[in-house]
Image (cartoon, rainbow, N blue to C red; front, side, top):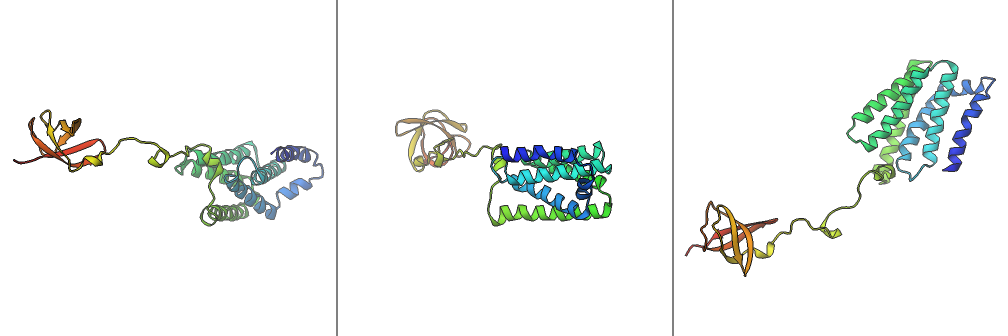
Length: 234
């Protein structure tokens, strides 16, 4: 991570000493713009599957810096345009933490608006953005559907432990062993009350509306802690 951070930190110095304008010509070249946008979106998508900060994130960040710096230095992009692009990227990444689609959609709109405002040719910039979006979408589908990868970034913000019986967690114990057993009502069931089964006092619910105290009953079903009994006719 330190290596990539050092590389990214050196980019502003290279830009600052670009007195010949070669950097501006490079960063605003239509073909380069398409490549930068593709690397940017695809890099950020792949970074979501990478633990820590790796090559995809560094490549996406580098492409973002080159694109925004080049268009800013050429005068095609202002502060507002740069802020739109950066805010769009932040919103898109925030969609991973706040799923639902709205945040990500807003982020894409902000990012697209910033890129379109920065481009010299609106038509070519729109085509480049569409191509970059398709490439990033293809990369996402490849990672999830084909390779079966999970988003490492997303797993940092969710609870991965499951509270099931295989993991030793028990919530409401279903008393299935009582089904078919006979007992006697200790209290009237209107429709709930107490029943004694094999010497154990249990809370039960009458299958009908009412069962008087001292009546013979049988357990007909259990639903979690709910035990349903039926009066046995003499």
